[in-house]
Image (cartoon, rainbow, N blue to C red; front, top):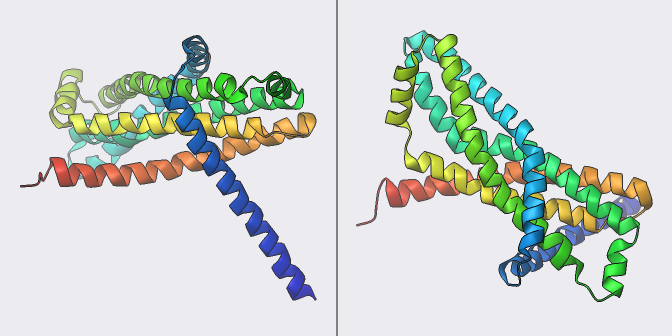
Length: 270
């Protein structure tokens, strides 16, 4: 009967989804546990961090520059209605360091990094290089996955620090030349209203973002099958899943950081 076939199809689809989620969760737990225990292969970690960070830095800085300029321009346009254009500096500084620079940098770098890792490991999988390592009793996770995950986790916060500087500079340039705010006055307002918690909450998020994009790229690349077509499919899945996971993490981490700051810092117990 059509109804029974439809129910069976839906059941099989949900089963596949649950198995995929369970497999990914198990992989994440095992990989994180392996990342936390020695030996750490520093040479491989440094090589991957340099490769991933050096290649992603230009596009990340360009993104941060234009994000900073757009935020200040839009904030100034809205504040002009109440004759408070100069306070675009304060709103932009908080918004850029807390949310905009970390998430936009993560999205741009994450898409590139996940695609690069998935394509590289996927090619190694379909050409049986990973199988050869397993036959030789060499743990491919220790040499291929762990260094990339650690490198991505370390690399993204460093890129974000540069992105904060570039984004705030871009906002200052836009504030001066488009909104008529003197550089000195713009900087004074930024320093006055920007708090340390604004910066640190955005910065800490990037460690989770970096780990997420490294884990996703390695997971889909490691399980690629089916030749060149399989590598392309794994790369696409890695990018889509990484971007989705980053947006979800942004929501969760922002909610938790607001709760922690409001509960323990702005209104301390006792």
